[in-house]
Image (tube, rainbow, N blue to C red; front, top):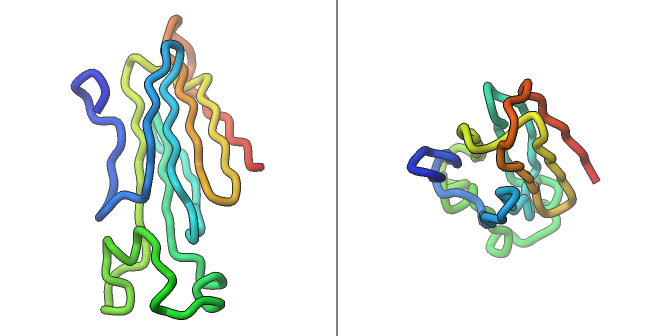
Length: 127
């Protein structure tokens, strides 16, 4: 929550994440380690779906491949293999200037704090 309003919503146990409240922005770092992320915009924010990386899982012994999905849904016991994280920035943030960066192990959202009302628009950059 930020300012008493919800910001991050997750199904099941959330993946490892960190939130940094900086003077000019809020930075959210979500781990995608051993996961395959799928990004999609939602009204005023974004949705990140995470599933276990089946190629990495096939290379590892089953006892040594763990992700947040294993904890959340009991993979191997008939549970779902999908995690969902929704980031819904509230009024203090300028979504029109949001910067989303994805690399091999993290998904980072830089949410600038609002100074001026702007038309919502997201920029996605994959590295």
